[in-house]
Length: 263
Image (cartoon, rainbow, N blue to C red; front, top):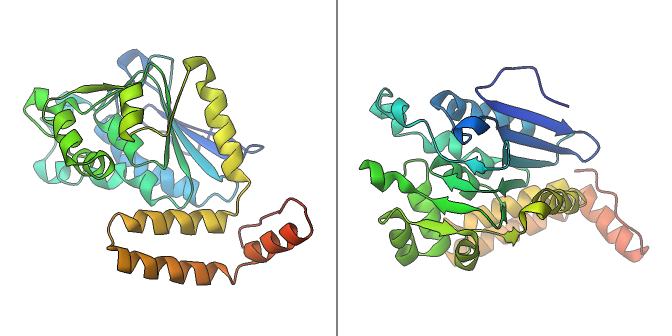
């Protein structure tokens, strides 16, 4: 089913009620699925819509066609967009990271610029073998401006981040996996099935525990170990009071599969 409540700029949202998933599809395959400024502005609202939908447990980002995920943004628009707005481009691109639900980036082919920055804000990155990652802004006399410098450096370390960004290097899937930029690399023919399998696995867990785990793990990026341990401890104690935890314990004792309700 396609969500039709609102029209988006070459972005489609498709829900699968049976699988409890929603796909955000960058739908401009004839132009490498580039994302316009309007599309960037709409991403935050799209995630707000899906975050509030109890029928959606996992969100998937993907590109239309079979050539690329997203080759970047609309370069001419940068010259007509006020510098103050450009200073806040990372806000909407961070929507996958802010989402309380697991978010999977389904990558193939060109994953450049804001496409890579969006992927890096997701929780899982499943990539076809033909995936090529790059932040090529240096070729324009610019730097990545939607979170790329920070998320890449935090993920792969400063040395590799400089090698990639300051040289505008294109990183193939196997190297990206070795660096930790990608969760898993699979043959292109297996990409959709692998993403579907991961989504099916994630849906089986308690949505409350998933949300808290994501919050605690994301907090580890910003917190020293001592503070992170306190955050983890508080979250652990909080989950002790949930119905889902009681169901998990009861199911374990009764040797059956738990049925989590997100409470």
